[in-house]
Image 1: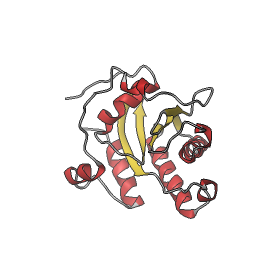
Image 2 (image 1 turned 45 degrees about the horizontal axis):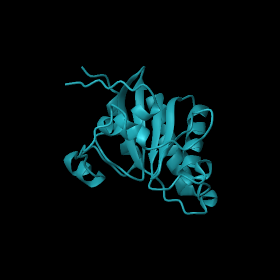
Image 3 (image 1 turned 30 degrees about the vertical axis):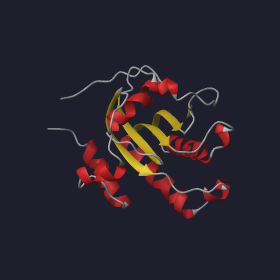
Image 4 (image 1 turned 45 degrees about the vertical axis):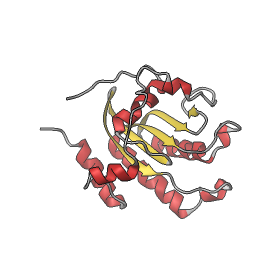
Length: 189
């Protein structure tokens, strides 16, 4: 059975995302593929570890490989939304947060390779930021939790529980991840 959720804005989309992905995954990046206004699949990847002095970390080979792999997923999807979930506090300077900067770098890289971006957001411990907004400002988490699409009390599996219940749908290798994305994009017959 297909359920249609109609998001009228970014907060609605963020409220519906756990139902779309079926998982609660802190310290994760999600890429959601779109065909028109409909989602067609998603991919989740752990956020790379970045220290307080993240400016040096973004030049690190591991972080650059992470960006490359995630951009390659986006290229295969073609039209995407990107959402980062972190336990970081964004209040003081959301535009200087390491994951906000990483999301901005990813969005730039996606645009350069021709991927159409529906939205790019970072959800932190104390609020969320939409990177496509005219002005980068911290928004209240209550906009998400008060959305009609938010399912209060929804019990979603942890990453470990999700992996256990979905054998064959999780991997730690770039090649297998890209193959899984290709499989998601195959038309249903």
